[in-house]
Image (cartoon, rainbow over all chains, first blue to last red; front, side):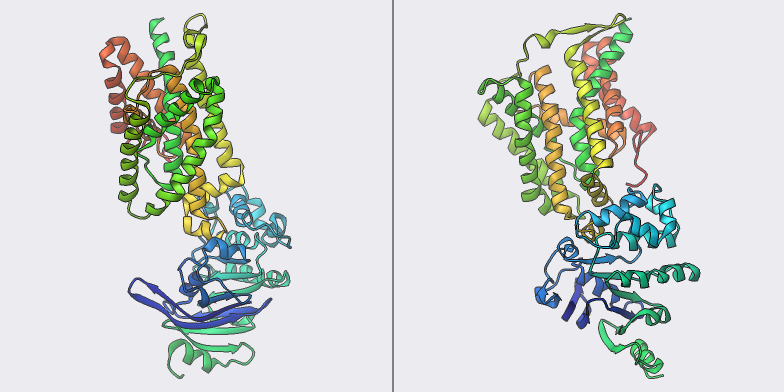
Amino acid sequence: MLETRGLTANYGQFRALFGVDISVAAGECVAIIGANGAGKSTLMRSITGVIGNEPGMVLHRGEPIGALSSAQIMKRGIAMVPEGRRLFPSLTVEENLLVGGQARKVPGPWNLDAVYDLFPILRERRKSPGTALSGGQQQMVAIGRALMSNPQLLLCDEISLGLAPVVIRDIYAALPRIRESGAAIVLVEQDIGKALAVADRVYCMMEGRVTLAARTAEVTREDIHSAYFGVAS
Amino acid sequence: MIWLDTLVQGILLGGLYALFAAGLSLVFGIMRLVNLAHGDLIILAAYLVLMGVTLLGLSPWIAALVAMPAMFALGWLLQAAVLNRVLGKDILPPLLVTFGLSVALQNGLLEAFSADSRRIPVGALEGASLDLGLVTVGIMPLMTFASAIVMIIALNGLFYHTALGRAFRATSDDAVTAGLMGIEPKRIFAIATGIAMIVVTLAALYLGMRANFDPSIGPARLIYAFEAVIIGGLGSLWGTLAGGIIIGVAQTFGAALNPEWQILAGHIAFLAVMLLKPRGLFPRAVD
């Protein structure tokens, strides 16, 4: 459904991605792991059009989308949970959720009620400013906001970053229900254990390149170690 | 009673200044753009309304209603074709572009309408007044003030109770993340400037009915608008009305003491507020 072909990305003179090839099939859950600075978030920003590309470097259902705007890419059904959550401070929790669904109105399982059922605490806090919530609750809003557009593909950038283990557990507990709704998921994670436990396939990145592509059922600890650190264990 | 009368006249005058300022406040609030051509756009709209009245024989109210969509389209085009290209981290390019636009508009209006002072004719309404017992107020100032209130309520309704308003606020908070939500920031900016031009047309209607105007007076109106916006605190429309009222009241009291002090008193009130509250009376929590 989504594919990158020789994807490169630059921040000014600095090249952050060197020919990245990944693919995600419909309904699949793919983990992208790697150390800080490996290029995982840059990859997400490139796929979602925050960083511009050559058209053919990113394909959605076989069509080049690399040169589209973030908004156009989102309307094709690719929703993003950005790193750091990035809730809108002027909007309440409910408004943050609504703003996620207002540009792409397609029939699907996700609406306000479905998101509140997934994360019941948000129903209680729906009138609060989004940024008045705890980090975990804000992450729930960010995930719910992305789901509101009933995406075919949900990109989750570091959804466990900075959260307490018990909160991470709650958020990961929601992933199976999101998958049941039919959406494919890309999980960008530094928490390897968490990511591998839910993903079908895994890519490991290092210094802007993919160093491992494997099925999680088949990958060994040694494979991960050498791909993550660039050395054999 | 003369002081009460002066106070009431000043408050009502504040309504006119709030109308001048609201469009400026709206555009700044959403895209952090300071439009130095705002005053000249008010004058342009006043000429449009005047043409509707003199050439088409419309009443000023109908002429303004006709001018509003035209001004919306102009604002939309201005933003989409010009201002969106220069908006960015550096605030200087858009400032220079709107300054250039201000000069171009003044010269264009001078060419088209000459330097003659004009006024939108309103007939008997111009001198009509309402006796409230303690004070007598002009119908026209009262309508101006009421229009400012209605306009602020309508704009706040748009901002806080519609999907478009959510998109405005989300884009104002974080344009990149708004893009990830399927919102095109540039389109939102174009709509916002279009709406600001509708407000500008309303301001122009009352400006043109209440006082003479000519192509050169835009910048002087811009100063009042700036002062009202800054006194109120950037981005708050009720604050802008409060700012307009403070300037209006200062001006009428200044004029009551000595007619030469009217304009000066307004500017001194502005400076006094800036000394006491540098961020304005009602600053937004996040700027």
